[in-house]
Each structure stands twice: as C-alpha cells, then as structure tokens.
Length: 486
Image (cartoon, rainbow, N blue to C red; front, side, top):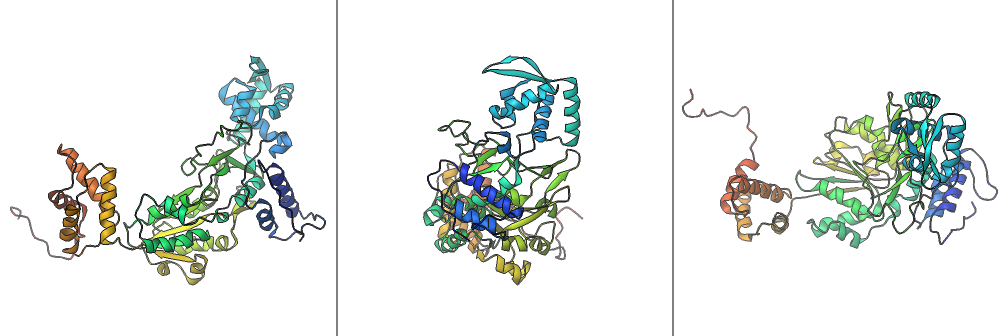
C-alpha cells in the first residue's frame, strides 16, 4: 500500500475529510484505486490513522445539497413538517431550525413553492420570504409525520459519523501526569493508586475499579474523562437506510463553552453537529441489554442510539457492576468482540446491520472481586484491574478538612481524631472515603434544625454516628421486649 501524504496547515478538515470519506466508501463498494488502496477490511482504520493523526476534526459547512449527503426528499419532509408545527416561518428561520445553510435551501424552497406545497406570506428581511403550507402541503406534511415524526435538525449520514468517531477517538489522546493531577486536583488520592491509574488511563483500554463500597470508585471513574483534553463534535442525529437515529443526548452530552465559536463566523461549521465535552456515560443497576442496542419507537418511527454510541470518544462507566438486571456474563459476551476489534454491529428497525465504532474507555466499577464475575477470556480484554482500598488515617483527616472548607465549617483536628478513636478504632470499624462527607452532612442538618452554628463537636459526632451506622439485625437472634409491653 502506497503511503498517503499528510496534508498540513488546515483550518478545517474539509478536503481531507471528503477525501477520506470517498476512499472508505469506495473500499466498501469494492472500487479499487490504482496504486493506492486495496479492499481489505482494515482500510478505514489505517487510512484514518494516517490522514487524521494529530489533526483536529471540524465539520465544515455544506455548500450544496449534495454536500449534505441526504436524499432531497428527506430534506423536503423536514421543511414541510417544521412548517406544519410552526405555521408561518421565514426561509432563514427554517434553515436555522434544520441547522442547514439558507443559501443551500433557497432553491429548494422555490421548488416546493412551484409544486404548490408552500406559499409566500409576505417578504422577510435580508431578501427572504415568509412561508406557510398550502392545503396539499398540509396533507403532504401529515403523511410524512405519520411515516416519521422526527422534526429536529437535519441528520448526518452514518458514514460521516463513523469517520468523525474514528478521527476523534479517545485512544489518540495520551494524558500525562500533569493532566491527571489537574483532573484529580480537588479530590484526595494516594500516590500509589495514582501511579496505577496513570498508565491505565493513558492506555485507553478498559479497566476494572474494585473494592469496598464508599471509597470513591464512581467518583474516580467520572474524573477519568477529564484527563482527556479537547472537546469533540457529535451530530444531533444520524441517517442510514431510511432510518433516523437520535444521538445527541443532553443527559450525557454537555455543550462546550465555546460551542458558538464566537471568534469565527457562525456559518463556518456544519451546524448539524454539536461541540461537546468528551462524554461520560454512567449506568448502574438499571442497565438492560435493550439499552445496548438501537431502540426503535414504532409509533414515531424514530430510533435512539445505544449507550455505546453515546459514549463514543469518551468514557462508559458501568457502575456497581454485577448488580444489573442482566447477568454479568451476558453483558460480557455481548462486548467481548467489540472490545477486541473496536467495532460494534447494531441492527436497525429495517433489519439492516450497521457497523459503528466502539471507541470509548470502558470502566467497570464493582464491589466484588473481578474474578468472581468474569472468566479469563474477558479478563484478558480488560488489561487493568485496580483495587480502590480504604483511606489512610492521614487521608481521612484530609478529607474532613476538604469537606469542612466546602460547607464553611471550621476544621478541628482534635475532634476528628476523637471520632476516629471512639467510633472507628474502638468498634473496629473501617474508614471509608464517603464518611467525612456524609457525617458532615448529618451534622449540618442537625445544626440547621436546631438553629445552631455549624461546627464539628464531639457530642455532635456521637449523635450522628448512631443514626448513620446501622447494624443489620439477625432474625435468629433472641429479642428483648421493651419495658411495659407484654
């Protein structure tokens, strides 16, 4: 395979992105390009690694209908459905609602007007018109809504999304010690654990975080994404084989602060894409096998992306692993091939199988020993297993100091030491990283209720410890009747 020359000095990926898409599409259709490529299955990975290495992905604004990459009939249906919802709208506002350039849609508005689906309702600023639906346009919009009720921003072709995920993969990042220090700056973590986490995060491979509950496994897992710099671009929705798949999810995707790119003109990028912080998707005991597939609503005829797709180019945290509604082995069998190949196969409602990137750092957080949950074959694919142990005596004091600052309470080392000696050492109770936060929370509630100044005192700890730490009653143990009750 002849080496593909690196293109340098881009402001955007317009030329390279289109070139890469053409090559990959040609490889999928079996077209051979002389002295350049063959049709091997690994083409797209190697090609994108060569072309897009060390470059930032930025979706450029389409300049024609063909650049949009969607059937014209789909764009027409989005226009008609949008007008059906709002009644009257200017052409520029319609283009803005669909996140497409007005200059590209201008001729399409005239075509729909010539077909008597749209009618002018007066002039609008900037050489534009207000539009509304005709009777036949309303009928057409009703039929299109019944076929598919999606009326949001125009989707992007699946191939564009595949290329974007591969270009923005988290594996291209190599966070160093400084990035880790910054990400974990406001939480305590001992140096030994820090040294274990560093190489694991840097590898971009999956990892197990295991240990006793309450020691911050979930907190650590959520901070890991912050080690990987740079925002990424994700589309609002994806189009493939006549189906629309919603991808952008505000529950997991948080817009970047410079999403508007004020230093550039608003039309300098494809607004069908959203610039977000690298996502951290957290799922716990509520996860089912259905959430790992593309979910289709037969009423609206709109699909929802799987959790893996929503977490691409970020982290997917399986919290409290082993306590889901599905058996651990069933989940692991579902992912054993994607973890190896970094490719996942999903099925559309039409029955078509699609291939999408599996480009995220998967973190399993569990209170159980990993060997109790998975077999050797799967353990090999999750190369890092890190135990999160109990905090040290010194770290426990430091945690109290941090949380006292957060709640604006004076930190008294002697009072915390009293707590440790009386309620941990004497009772043989183990320290947990969540205890300082929780006990201070109970003291604050007690002080607010009794209209007392917030402070830590020995008697306050004596009171809240009794309600915070509970003993499980043995049903077989003999019971003592309360006085006065026979």
